[in-house]
Image 1 (cartoon, rainbow, N blue to C red):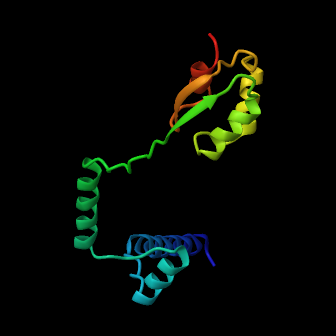
Image 2: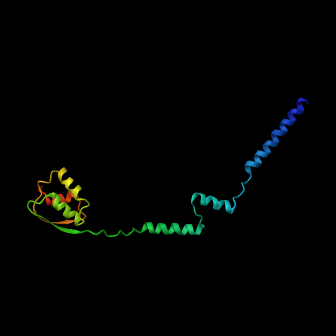
Length: 144
């Protein structure tokens, strides 16, 4: 084979490969079948819905987001706590826990001890609410 023939053959191969490459990359891919789409959705835990249904869901969500959600009213309990002279913090803390005013008598006693209030508890009758925290209750029943 001559040099010129070899170059022509190589050029022909290059041109043919270029045409095949261009046609491959510019052709539209095959559309997936309905079964392939369903398999894809099931594999990922997704659901397909119609565009009109999707738009309706979005409108409903926007209107519900604009309207503030009604909060359920929290029930506040009021308890009349009577502390007698000589009562220990354990006594009235347990009483408050039984009445549902505080979550734990033990943590309330620890709070009083940590803040040095166990010796400054005043005898008397106090209206204690369930929405009060430990600090508010201790301010109510202890000397400042």
